[in-house]
Length: 75
Image 1 (cartoon, one colour):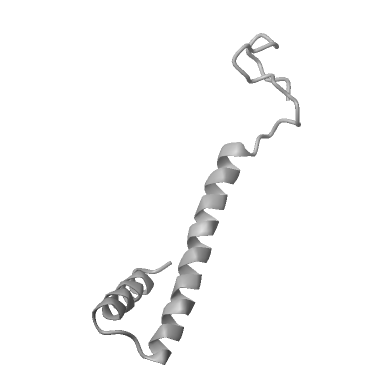
Image 2 (cartoon, one colour):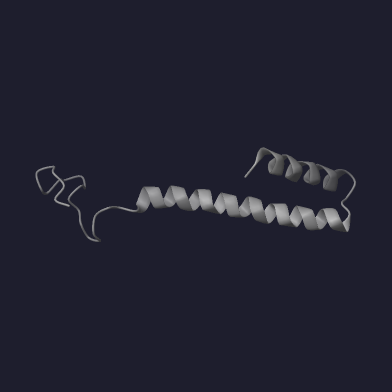
């Protein structure tokens, strides 16, 4: 997502509120919103993947609070 894209989205939003948009501008706004939403979704997905993807197999609790392996990961 570029600064120019965000700037254009804001310009169109302001114009829509103040005076309305032409059909061409409405189409452009819709396309820019789609680009923006894809970028936001990708950012959220990346953050969630980094937070919740573990190198440990499902059910492994060796790094949980109680450290059943003496505090050393067995994987």
